[in-house]
Image 1 (spheres, rainbow, N blue to C red):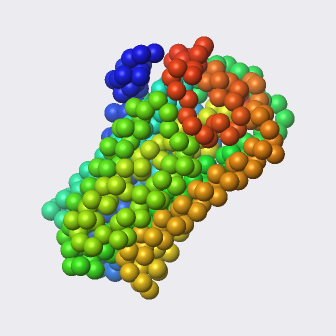
Image 2: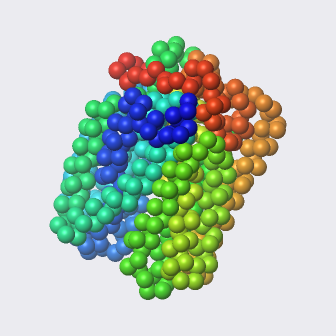
Image 3: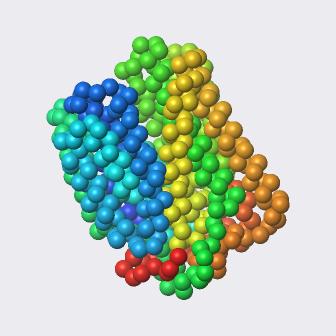
Length: 449
């Protein structure tokens, strides 16, 4: 296991299929990452509407994605990646190719449909990593995935703005549609496994579906809400702070610094042997946001946003890594979908609440609101989890034996509190779970859920 400890990312990318999965997911995320800014520019410049109306279109897409994510994740669990993704590719590409020619009212409806059928590349990537990567290397895998997401959201919106402003918003939306087709085809070609061979060969689970929504899972999903609340609140407060001092032009590079801090934090987190629980990391994320509220000048604000960015990728990657260990394989797609929905809820709550506080106080109060609410949710989750663990005692999670993989069993031998506590080190893992899982695609029907 020494190579994993010293060179975690090199060893990770040498695992069969993992490097290809990262490359495919990076490309496939580009159209999604640029859609929001392109839609906003199209509504404001080409349709002559206001920013509030542009926000309504973006909001419709967000609501559609929040509603559709668990449903699409469950489809992946039940019928396999290819059969679940094909309808998304067809519908979403049609929506964005037609979008430049729609009226404003029709565009609102189309944006909702596009979100509803959004290609689930984010959840599929994480679900596949949980199957393809041994437990001892999963922290590095999810950390690298979070870093890749940060880089995508740094580059893709810039590409969208260039196309929309230098060519036209019609061309930019058409590009989104075309790249959506390409991303979907690429994902279908790669067909990364979302279930291990052992899970696919297991006998069907008889009777009603087992319950997986326990206190452990609920508090981790709440951590996703809290993290998104802090991040979107920081975003709104950062823009307001710079506008307040007449430095709106600095928003782009300030956000790049913030994302850069997240990239550094994610890489360091993935290379560490141990780390705090995801709830503790969200609490750290909230605390790290506080200095930005008291930055007297833009230079200090720039330093503060780098600090605020450091825990971002670690918190998000730890949430994802914990979720996949809390549920059996045949329910992971659905749960990862719920994670996306919870992140959307955090965004939907954080932006208006922090904006409302900023309007009635100062931009600094927006940072403090994001930190206070996100930190309170994280600390409350830790308290609930501890109380639940004390009441239950050291028992395994309620996952049926026929749904457990070797990695599942290694995790379930610990107490529930341990699962969302400090993560396992490579030296802690022994036996079958320290070797790559035997994985396969969805060419054969998965076990009935």
